[in-house]
Image 1 (cartoon, rainbow, N blue to C red):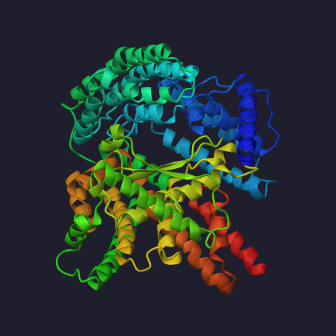
Image 2 (tube, rainbow, N blue to C red):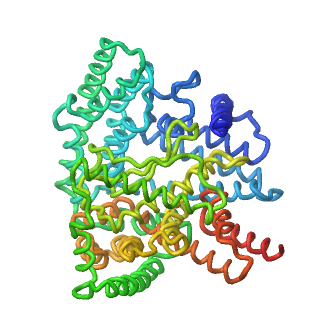
Length: 606
């Protein structure tokens, strides 16, 4: 795996340079736009021990200065970071765009858009619910500590314990931020507070000895060669003490604050409910779609796509003799059909994982005909950790580490196997794994000659748009559903799910739909259960605009492909088209469109 060594060596060198730059920001003069972007990116990384660990390159090496720490979550730190972005954006203009071409020009344009987007968001300090039922430190940090922090020797365990003690400090800092948000009119809706309280209470129920931060450790200690039992017991004891004395009190204080806020909030769902809510949502749409489309435009596109998909789903169901009743009722009946479900047992869960692995093997056997470059990193299919399955989606993807120490992982939620019937599973697999997120993100991390920033998927419209487009490629191009009309129905249901998101997200945040209106619309159009839909709608409440990225990105890629097919005729090559979309990594849609246009001109001229 020579590529691992090259990436590791290059990243370590960059971190060393960045560490020096952190102390000499004013005198270090990078040569060229790539070096400049690397400089500012790595300066940002130095302020986030979590991000450095997430990259996976220098933990447990002689250069590890961070893996016993957590970042600062104070208002002052946020202001410092925003000031750094302002300086970085101003400095970027000294390196382009005039005089740049090729990858350097592309890097400049992507980075400029990225910095400008952060600054647009920064215009509104009080714009989100920083602790909620699906994100924020009370949800994200436990997952980070148990899943991402690497334990391979005694020192890494002691750094883990140090981070647990730091977690208490972080909880205090974030609680102060929530109190400040409250003073400025930003309090979550009552149902968000209620669900957040459920999660926080469940996390500390049973005390330290039952907490996942402690119970996940013994298995990891078993993998440390040469660790004597006495030392292992000492480390587990120290872990329990940190959780008992730092983490649990931090959660208890946050719980008390949320209980107090529950008495003063409203039931309104949309972000319009907070000061400057309309402007905040407009910015959120621009950030998530990387377009200038308005909420009304997105809403109408959603309605149009819902109508189209209803007709296609109706045709499949009718052809299968499933013609009676409302569309949503027939979809629900298929979801609940025992013949389409894996047993909700350990054996059934193992069978589901085997089914998904077989799907991946089948797709990868065909992939070379449709893609120029296949990711060398393996894809691992695993269960969502049981401690987080209640608040997790049906499936999600975590990218590989750049040093090869961690594969790409598709996590499937197996709390209730009936939530993922057999006819719907393939589409979820193709979205989260290959040829969806795993292809796009893995290849992006291996790009050469580009700044570090471009190796990470920071544009949702591109990354989620690609994954939704990939579902269609698997079906209509690769023939993965040949002879399986219900599997193709699963694809259409998945696409319907994303089309409905356009309607309900803009409905709540721009058209002042209630939570209940959005839930009823989604149930009617998707056939999902009320519990599933409720979780989804409440997710859109706390992440305004994010749900619009998927369909917006997919439709943009489909439009680019249709234009290329029309203009190139016999010269159109699907694998080459996929390569031009994937090879430069994530970017705003307008920049991607310009890249595709340039490719069309090049092929036409050739």
